Length: 277
Image (tube, rainbow, N blue to C red; front, side, top):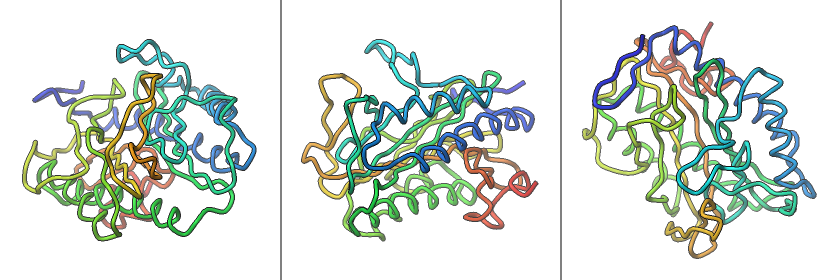
């Protein structure tokens, strides 16, 4: 059975296997989304596709019915377009246009265990600035994942994300949101900032499962909430990118639970043997 310390849930290898099953359902959704995103497609259609893929693969949508005091979330994905940073509710009325970017955040439950990941993709041809924004966000996520494999404390992950973003260009790092622990609940301790000093925070230990989740902007990173209570957008209406992977800290490296290859291509020798087999 898993154990807890400092409100962090530590998993066994067998429980990581169950989380991998949920992670692969999330990966299947993202694969379907990449093929479906196009001008003229609505975010509501993307939501319907996502729920079908989740259920066809034996999962339950993590997001649908999730309640943080705003009433139950009504969809299976969050589909945040352009200046929307996170948590936007999909709708048949929101139709994607050439040059847009859309973040699709997906969660799935299999056998009581959660997987959670997000991608940001372009709609048709997008500008070079937006291509660079997405690439910078993705690289910062992988920098954080590598730091989880090599670092000693949670602050090493946060610092690696921040350092990577700063090295990529003049981007804003959204505050107030970040990564989190994950397991038998979608959101668990610890909260993971996307900025901060190294060598601080809880110790990184085998058995941790973490969702690494940077959000960056082309402009000022200050955010505001829409009237629906869920959607978070940039205050200056600048474009935002958001990506996420759920990872497992194994004794021999990191296993990216929501990546089809387990993270092997991006992590190399830092990847757990689980990613190789």
